Length: 103
Image (cartoon, rainbow, N blue to C red; front, side, top):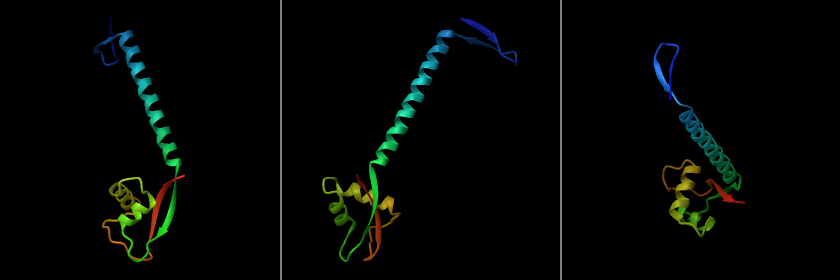
């Protein structure tokens, strides 16, 4: 236990154990943050973007089932709407959609 006075004259408690503990927590936090960022970059790098043309009679549901048959079409539709800035599910023939697919 050590009592110190800062430059404004206030007394505060300083402990080497607390400082060491806080530094360990800080280093673990930074390491976890770096790990998370590098993994998210790797996840983005494993996908590529393609463009598909909407044909007569196509719907977001049919396109979602065609491009990713093993996934839930509702999730794929949400991703398609987000990637293409679609507010509704209405598509027109000749419209181009960007899709991201696994490499």
